[in-house]
Image (tube, rainbow, N blue to C red):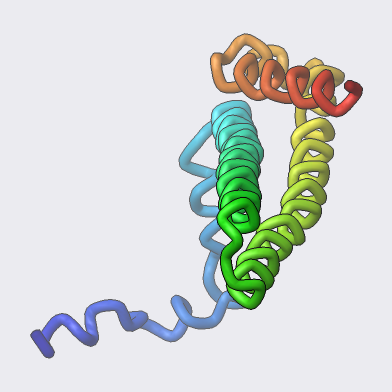
Length: 153
């Protein structure tokens, strides 16, 4: 209840004044080796960047499905001789679905570019030799190569 409300408050002035306290990042880094923290952060970055691409691809697939369904609905309404007002409204819905696709494609291009920078940085740096052997890096690099090949077509 109310007893727990104050538990998150700093206990001393040093905790709320970063200039007087050791920064949290410094504390965390001192607890792990440099290689471990760098590799862990890079793996996290790769997972996040690959996840963003997968999410956008999923969004695009759903968008394509909705566009197809809506186009079929409009055509069916025209074939049935439906009211012109109803057809016009359904065409507006189709236009709305279609208009969101270029924004998703732009987001995908930016996400691929971002992942490409990270993958290239890892590939080119001898500091990341251990990271190159991880499943996360291999999966991110494969996803990147797949997207670059798709974009080239």
